[in-house]
Length: 333
Image (cartoon, rainbow, N blue to C red):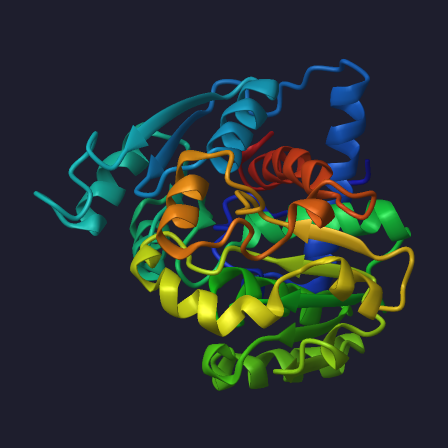
């Protein structure tokens, strides 16, 4: 493909740091790399590159996507769990960054405080990628947008509606990405869980350039009308499990169920979720929540999760192709 943008050496911490053209370039590169993988064409653009994968939080998709994506292109990933290194314990994050930057060619961080990934990016001297913080989840958004593009052929003008906790990292990141790329974005959430107003205003300014609209509402019926893609996330993020009881009371009217799907008025609507999802009691955590709170399904019903509207596993696969694109664009030859 035509390498129109030179992103070599750049950190990938938030979509706010990238232009509309640069994000679209990453999506185009993702499509190209996905086609090559499905054709059995193995890449070498990360050959000889050692990649540190730092995880304060557990992970399925992010860890596997970075690992497989790096290996597909000849890179050598090294998993560093929260108990494997001294990050923020016996030494400062800045000191760890300077050590790892002399040994590794790129660093992924998945954890809690967004400031941690910013310090890694500032001091390591190598590309740093945000695999998730409490504020942003930019690699997830690339996978989401690739999935939307595959279903509708475009992103600009698509009506993307997020339902649930409107101030978590997913709601924030979907809003920044939509504002950049021209999607009409709606957050449907109780007023107590509306996003930070400063971020909303920043995204509305960006939306003026892209033609997007940003809407915040607490009405779960009117708010979903006309949605092309309906998105939700867990009601309590990692580290917030103690808030489950309060969140269940607040968010039960915002559950994505078949009635909500019908309320969109769009037979071609798709359902998205970053996963894992509490859609049944077949997991240990799901059973525990059922025993404690008497609720079998939380943010999405099993009926919707397993329905023709669901694209959650396409979305999960696309995490790997888009993460590979980020690594190749910022580190690869």
